[in-house]
Image 1 (spheres, rainbow, N blue to C red):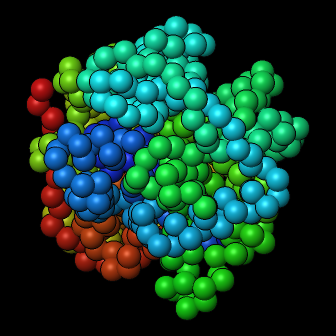
Image 2 (cartoon, rainbow, N blue to C red):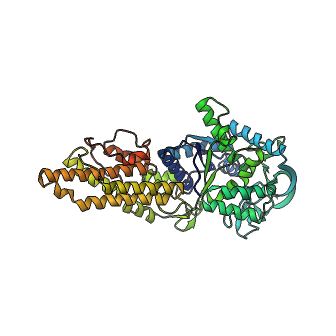
Image 3 (spheres, rainbow, N blue to C red):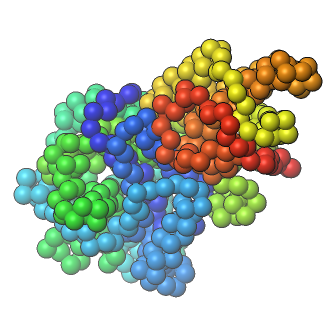
Amino acid sequence: MKIPIEKPVLVTSALPYVNGECHIGHLRTYVPADIYVRMFRKMGYDVTFVSGSDTHGTPIVLSAEAQGITPGEVIVKYHAHFKQVFKELHVDFDYYGQTDSETNHRRTEDIVMKLIENGHVYKGEIKQAFCTTCGRFLPDRYVEGTCPYCGESARGDECDQGCGKHLEPGEIMEPRCKICGNEAEFKDQEHFFLKLSSFTDFLLDYLDTLGGTLNARNYAKEWVKKELLDWCITRNLEWGVKFPGREDLVVYVWVDAPIGYIAFTEELLAARSGDENAWRRFWKEDKATVVHFIGTDIIYHHCIFWPAMLKGAGYSLPAAVVASGMVKIDGKKFSKSRGDVVWVTEFLERFHPDTLRYYLVAQSSHTKELDFSWQSFAMRVNKELVAIFGNLVYRVLSFASKNFGVVPDGDIEEEVFEAIKKTKEEVISAVEDYEFKKFVDAVMKLADFGNSYFQREEPWHLIKQGDQGRERCGAIVKNVLQLIKAICILLEAVMPAKMEEAWQQLGMENDVHTVQLDELLVPIESGIALKEPGRLFEKVEL
């Protein structure tokens, strides 16, 4: 669903758990969000882009225990790793924070206290898994067992192998301790709950107006209509944000993690303006359009828990939730133990980051499952980037450099302008609908048109036909250079480094990263010196 953009836009990407290295499954969220931000800026919107590392919860503690280091050391290590990966992939956040910051602790405590003051939190007892072998209570991901809803294997907080349902403490069947593997037993323990069930009517109304992708809205509606259970918002961990008034409990990671979106906005705007209250227009005064980019596996958290928390604490609500489909490897679910995983750092040692950015959006529709294979990656690079766009740029610039050295004189033909205009309209519509595959397909079609136009007009014959032939040849070359210019502007959002390279080969002196879409139909200036062309993409050998 398209959202009306009448206010500044705040785009967020789901926070990666910094308990291990980045694999390509993570990138299904971050790369499309970056493309969306870049395109919206080209369309003239005021956009802020934030994300950060999720540094709390049992995944961090489990990783620390496995490595024999502290949770603090884990987050320092992997926070730096993710920042470096995003830099190499040109995922260009305005701010990338982390949830163990003082700001996020303070903002979390404020929101939890507001929920308590407004009567949305109560104390109760739950059945908590207890390992008699290890002698301790087991928070969510320390527990494995069977999902009570679909019967598949599940972890303590989520049915990650089956229906995807969020699981409350005590719900999982046949619990086992993840550390020692022995059976666990349930014991009563005091915890705190958000009255999620009381937000049912609000959520049904809210979801009717929520922008973003249908998969997010429909999935959330289905769960709300079934039955909302109150939500346990505390855990037995030492690592995390302390629950107000309790030293033995921390808030559940899915409380403080999304609050990171607010804290990161707060930290960014305070640094920019010096105004510690600048964040309020985004999150308290409803003066911004907030768009969340997430994975399908966390729709429940972002479309049910998060808006209920915001509503209950008196904060502004997100305007849209954009949920990507999951990523598989050769038809199999990601599994580090089985080796069904592609690590980003290893990928980037062999291939240019822009080829991965392109593949992630070109291979399937954003909301559909993406099945990664080396064959499909090679096909996308070889048949599209090399054979269509790369061939167009190298072929035309080589011919133009050899015969003219500069952008020749000539008028841009109506046929070319119409092709660019049509592509522009298709691209804007696709981006507004979060259909990034349609976006790149439309631009590749324009590149295909450029190859066909150049082949049809046969400028290599015209150049041999005296002054009149040379003049017509120059006009044809200028028209194709206009197409290349337009493609560079459009694909900059998808392949920023490679389009900068192509832009420079065109002899353009302005910054392709800041060029607006209005420039698409501005004729390329005659007389600009063309640079020595080089091949933009290398063929992938399997």
